[in-house]
Length: 346
Image 1 (tube, rainbow, N blue to C red):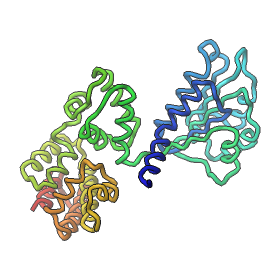
Image 2 (image 1 turned 135 degrees about the horizontal axis):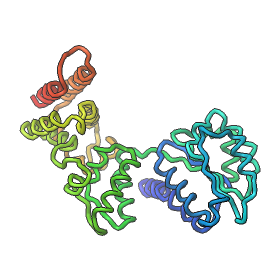
Image 3 (image 1 turned 45 degrees about the vertical axis):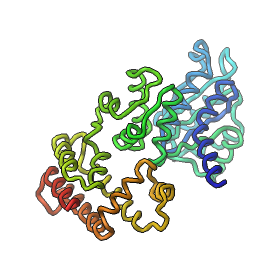
Image 4 (image 1 turned 120 degrees about the horizontal axis):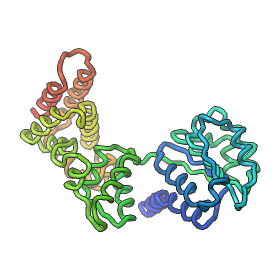
């Protein structure tokens, strides 16, 4: 029952943007759309949809206005919002980079209490949120719509990738999606741009795999941190050394600081794994916040690296991180990486 409720909440959240766009398409409009939060992709998606779909092309010239937070005041936005549309049912005002108005945003309260019904006022308030205790938040919630765009946790991004591709009649295998997350992190804008490239190049119904990623995005399917972690977990010395030699020759696309960070996360999770009482696959996946795809790697790595060795490796990683910043050693990145991997594997 608990899993069912969790899945329902997660599904509702993932469909929120879709539901907002569906209402806009049906002309079920709010006088204020306050789009806020850390993940800019969803904010852009809703804002762009309003910009493209609320007014006809013939109406936009007189009735659609784009403002930027750094160039306007709240008073100017309110004054513009109170005007009546010209030869149209409504006007649209979109305030981009509205987070630049954060110091004076509470002045919007008077307008939020009684917004102009013929105006659709949109705030793109990126990387910040309104204080939910304040009157402004409560007033907008009564009259308009507040959408909080939260960052996805890394282990949720592959699901989002699959959902985006499924909607466009594409699929992606597990390794390919994990390669994208490893290389691009949780920046959905970057990932979305790369997915668009793939969908331009590849025909519909393609099942995107690691070869497609390598050939079209430039992420090596054999020489990446994903494969390095796997090789180290297996204690595969030959494969590990081949990968770090590749990294040493391609430092721009494989920065040392990223490799150290990812290995530190892996061995920190492995330390936690050793302490788990319930080592069922489902429990491990939830406890470590990892894809079920990776769970078997942790069982193998735990056999190869007992808890005392993991503790030592975390110390090696801290030392390598300090050296990579030029403290206490005069070594280049190649030598630091080779020394680190030798210490881990022996």
